[in-house]
Length: 119
Image (cartoon, rainbow, N blue to C red; front, side, top):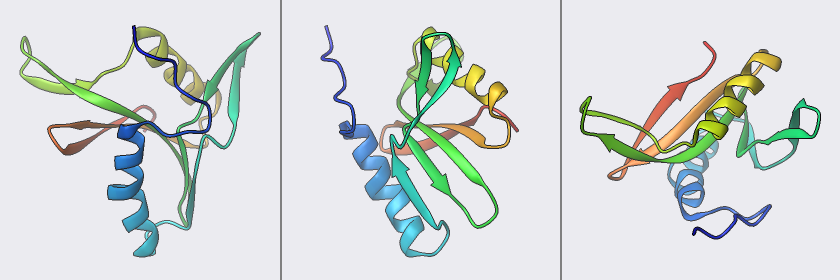
């Protein structure tokens, strides 16, 4: 059984994403700022979604959910490792808060991939 994540502390995949993707974007001026787990969004009664990274661009806000990736033999594609519950929550959040761009960023074999939830 996996240990539960510690609130406010990035796991190894989230740390790699911050150091390899977000920090260089910040230093290059591509983004204004980003925050790790800045707040939860309410999805319903006693149901919340905790944002991994809230990313501030000059013209928009994005929510980045960071996951590991997996290779699916049947399709030959790479997909985020995401439980059904987590996928339902991010899709629900994207529907309830459509003015932000919702993205799953996932890493497989040292490469980063993007799955846009709302376009």
